[in-house]
Figure 1: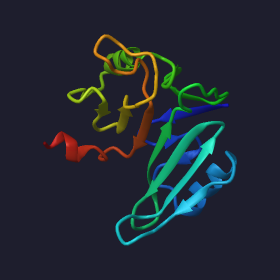
Figure 2 (figure 1 turned 120 degrees about the horizontal axis):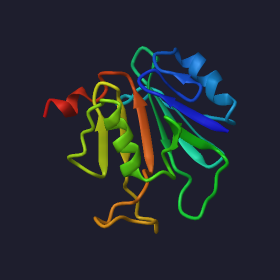
Figure 3 (figure 1 turned 90 degrees about the vertical axis):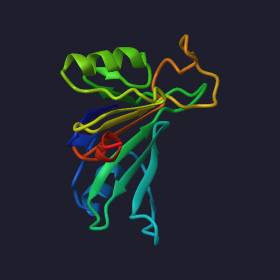
Figure 4 (figure 1 turned 60 degrees about the vertical axis):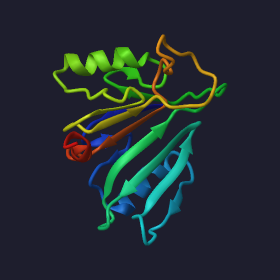
Length: 162
């Protein structure tokens, strides 16, 4: 199954801004989700695994989905699920290829921290952090991304203001 990323509006079947019950119903087709919170420090989250691809749906204080983060299956694990952004599987396509395509679309890519890249205004965030044995580029970074986050347009404004 393909999980299509459509920043800044959706990740797979989860539409950003959707109420909690709608988001919960959307991820149930991936299996049984786990609900965490709310706690005194954090709003509610829905977490789970879809064929090895981990996910978390984040909510605001009003219980609307604000972001969806997806993680690659991990070292030595296979998945039939593909997380696609403009036709690229973000966990198998080289990160440099994904970023070049985003720039070609005219989007600003902030790669000041090459392990935590983001696209302000869209809002996409990518990480290349892992302690696992994976192919690495000449700078020691994993060749492909290890997680991707799709959020609303202003999600990364705090990083752009720094």
